[in-house]
Image 1 (spheres, one colour):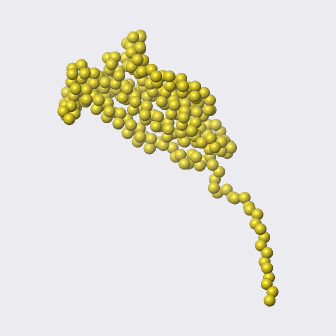
Image 2 (cartoon, rainbow, N blue to C red):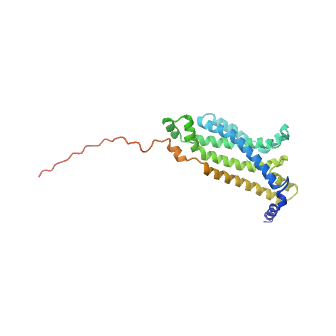
Image 3 (cartoon, rainbow, N blue to C red):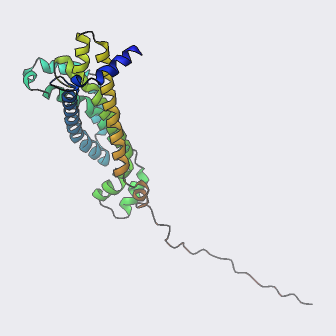
Length: 249
């Protein structure tokens, strides 16, 4: 409780929020790096994964290649960039490292979501005369959307948490608050920095969850569009003629 109390005191001290090393400035740097990294990763991974999932070819190879990137630590990639000419390019090394870290989960979730769409529904849609674009936009994408969005939320939270490593190579972000606390043996500042990162990750998760509920496509309508309607007349059934019997007294 003592460290939490010290962290609360640090967070409620106005001087810690202003200036070049203040919370607001570091928060802006952290949000910028995380946002740009997520945007670039989505532009790379999502179109490729959705297209491969739609045509059903090459997806396994793409996922295996992207998964190789998961085995490489982000900090190792960032350290390599910092001994290259990119070290004088501002946040560019951190952004590239985070993009390489984020592409694999986005690619995997989007591709798996597309391939898990019921093939019978897809074939029914094609049989009703839908074009490839209509099948993709009206059937496959709405049904794959939940898994795609789950991967997006998970990747966003991971990026926010991982962006703190930028401070390990002298760059900005909320990680600088944590490393500064370590350098001065100020445990309260370290805890305060960790709390700020956790709160930002929760805020991103909550925002994306709310956005998900606002823009989520109507999945039942999408699936029903590819099925025969229940109003179609049923084929006539043969009936056995009944014979009347007359009783005589």
